[in-house]
Image (tube, rainbow, N blue to C red; front, side, top):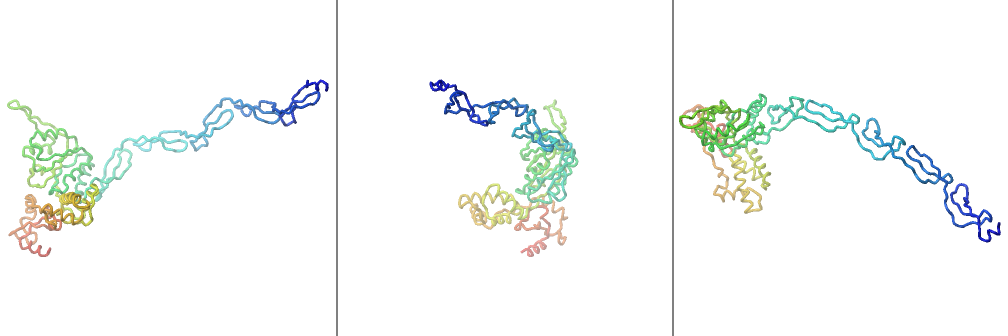
Length: 463
């Protein structure tokens, strides 16, 4: 046998190097000759790791081989009773995915008659909200411009500022208006008809629009002089809806025939319309929805007495310097202008209590400053501008208004045609309680009857 191996015919067999190793080499079974090359020969066996995974493992060295993995039967499992976090877990082998997701168990919960919420039964999270429109009822607080809204269905309350809080000045008038508006809301009816009196620039139209905003109704604004025929009024009124507000600027400029149509429309919510011409013409009566007319005027004495008797009359008082300053400052902010505080105070102190006059001079001064200076309005700029436009530099160019005839008539009747100081009825004069130079205006509240002697005595004391 060794002889045969020497001739080169070995009987090669694979032999493991030792018991715990899978390394083998070929060795001749006859002569013991060994090949140098080594190889790995594992003794594989299948071992089940879990119901979904079988793995090949070498019985000698423990090496892992092929893996036979079945499809997992995934199911979602909550992490704990109070949580909505879930993981996917195999129902057979228990293996868990790392990804976590939220799965809520929603149910609808009624919070109040106007609100339903989706709430998770497990964790209490709030999802979708189904909210019905509240049925608000407004309640005005006395001596305040805050409104408390209460839902008549669910009882929830909210506070909101009144539109009057944005209107500067006229506190007495605003308090009276709030009372009328509160009554209208409480009784669910249209607002009473109003007449706002005051000179140009007192903010009558702005106040009328503020009233409309507070009522939350539709509004239409027209000029009294634009109503030339009765048909003009009929066309407007037939398009009004219940509780809508019609603002008539310069209502004293309406023609007599227009007032003849407007008066029954306001008093009885009806107008008479003539259809056709000649013998075949006939008159029909149109019923109108209840609406509100707010008139503005600078001369209440020229308004048709029938119309005036159907309205609540409000006389706008002169604004004080602080209120005018606030109005000017608001306009400055809106226009992005540059102005010194002293210039604002100057305008406010010299405008006769009329914001419109102060704003007019402010706008002129702004244009002048842009052309001739760096754009900043100072007291010097205002004086130069007034001089440029042929007005006195001491601001006496804020023209002193003539006392309206209707104011004179009212004051005469109120004071009984006698001096309010000594009760004399001779040499009577109309006196400004607050002098025009100090911001007094030509309103009935600021005018009184004095005899010549008492008026001169007052003038000496003021000086």
